[in-house]
Image (cartoon, rainbow, N blue to C red; front, side, top):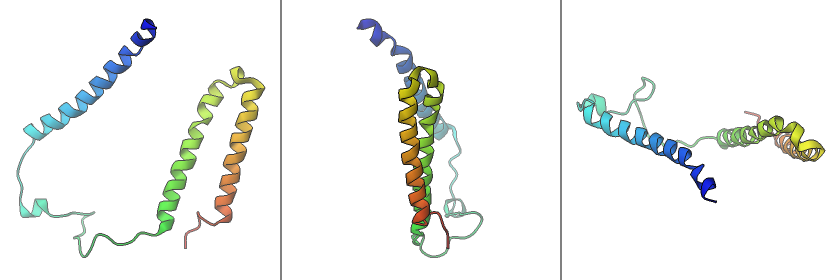
Length: 121
């Protein structure tokens, strides 16, 4: 049991180093960086165009739908990598499970196409 816990020490050290680096970089850049402010520098700037009006204009739901669908299918594709790496060890049972997984993925994709979620007007 003790040796299992010792195996996680390198991961903990790497995590602490990563967090320490990020926090340290933010603190050092805040202390060493220039602190000049002016009306022009503090003004909102968006792609070289002056900001006019309210920034809270409504976006089309289609934009968010496409973004969510991209993330959903992107994450599901990530599950293909471990399956491909362990293909021989998983045997026929792994193949059946992956066929079921891919079938459900395709059913969801065809449902999205049928509902015209990816069509822009």
